[in-house]
Image (cartoon, rainbow, N blue to C red; front, side, top):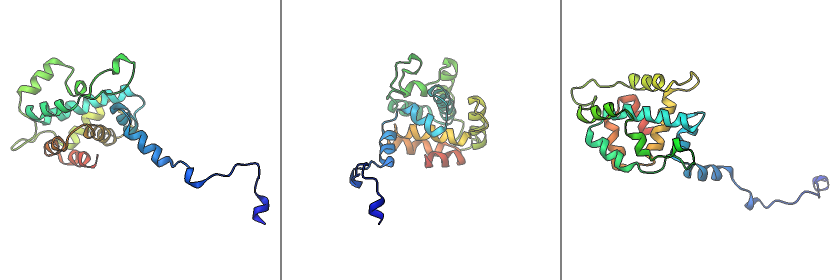
Length: 181
């Protein structure tokens, strides 16, 4: 009897030809640009917010790293941030890594890192508070989420050596976020 109730006007579907949305999403994730990854994973409204948050996270990260590490990271970040005709978004990831303020950029190259043996440095709470405050995050977004999004997109661009080199310089909770990203 169940066969009699089927609609003969509908075409039959071969189950081997049905597209799995998980495959489509995985492919889309793989081909997303740097800023698209940050925007989607971070829950940000647009690529401009993703760019601004990325610059802030990168600035705080640079405060924690040695000049040599900063230079090695920069040398690996040469993909476009986003494929677009928008002039404000036409840049390499390395341009986001560099500080836009020339004085701060200079000082970060001549001063020692703010974390390391004998240094109290930047705590995880201070790192995340700076991201939230400097980034003007709405209360609906957590600093942890956007930091993890930036870390994840960044790690996609870095070699395993660079990823391992950065980790010990990050404060405890932020280091956990780095390792999870």
